[in-house]
Length: 373
Ligand code: GAF
Image (cartoon, rainbow, N blue to C red):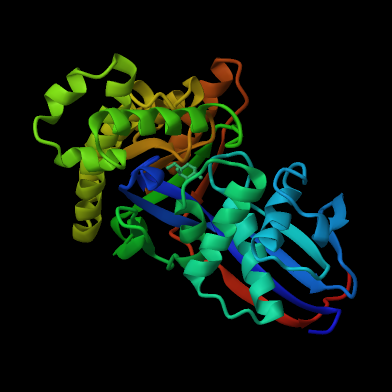
């Protein structure tokens, strides 16, 4: 490939309807891609330099010096893709996004997925969507050091518009089923409520929860904690665990059941069934897995109180966003109630926006470099 050749790809963020933290625990997750996305243009250079630019922020380095932990901040997600693919020629990566970052909407997976797809297009690597998702995952876990599961990258790369994705992480390789997800056809809007409390997956709570769940699995004698649902006498076994581990395990085993029920409701187009299921999912995330925060709790109770038929926190937690299914005629009321409730507590107004189930990543353009904006 000659220097100057370039490709542009766009990859969406995601929200999870249910199945939180189950991707690394061998369970099923039910997610949909957002309409908001990150765009990456990758342009080949004739040296070994790597330049990553987003708006006015630029990072420079060399592709031959890439080692885990070497690149600070957001450019590491782009650099990580080159590292994961062992690309040794220099590139310019130009990033643009309308996806809020640090909002639990997997902006980092969208960034890595967009770079992976654009790089695949410009270098003609011919990788499958699954291989690209694995590449983006390795960029995030290996290069950046975020102890995440494999859900976000897969959703970003394979989602279909108007469909939710039920991904099963039970075997070595995730399998998936696409389910109808058209709340608009039932007169409902899907709102994302970004609390603007940001959490970094690389530090703190997320990794701690992962370690606790792995310890609970070990003590229960199962390989992955989601497998505990099949244990005979589960309630007694949970009672024999230290309280904290019992609560983590209870969340996981109950969440496994909720995923099945929410998937069945989507297949049947029964949106009303989601109310109690998402309520229980949020309560479990708050009380047992302890990944919620006061802002997420307020977002959920306020949205429900103002007319949402279902609401819960979504994503890794400790900040980030909630999702709410709201009758179209109540969207303004729910938005106003959220703003008022947050301001009343002296918090910043949440950022609320509607979304449909969006399309997975796409190559938007291939060819010579686009002229500078
Ligand atoms: C984050 C992680 F990156 C995912 O792998 C997943 O565990 C999610 O939190 C929680 O469901 O987005």
